[in-house]
Length: 187
Image (cartoon, rainbow, N blue to C red):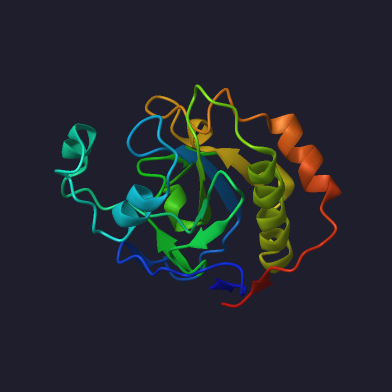
């Protein structure tokens, strides 16, 4: 589990154990907004915790009985919340393939960034996502910068995120500028 005084841990019931002898060697970046176009984290947190009131908004009806989680969520202000221990298998990628390997949930860490395809992501999100990724690379030696991918890369026929609004060049500039790694990882 990744832990830091600044990173609250809200344990999601939507996880499973990774297959035995599986190296964690990839990070998958996602984008999420619930409902579509709204960036408050309350509904996202409730969704990952299995507590979403599907009657609260018409868009939520399609989410009834769906069990999804991610290891981390990065809010618009850069605040990171953890939902699943990094050593566990979060349910973020669904049917997915990367370099002829299926089931990316088995060997990846999922990071949801609050946003959509219409609004630019914030500088705080680029900075804190980069800081989190740098810390994960230090902790998991099989993850390399080239193995930080988008959901659209591992499920291109069904997913768009983090989408055209996620500026990969800007992200990697932030990634290389990070000097303060005060995120402490704990398995």
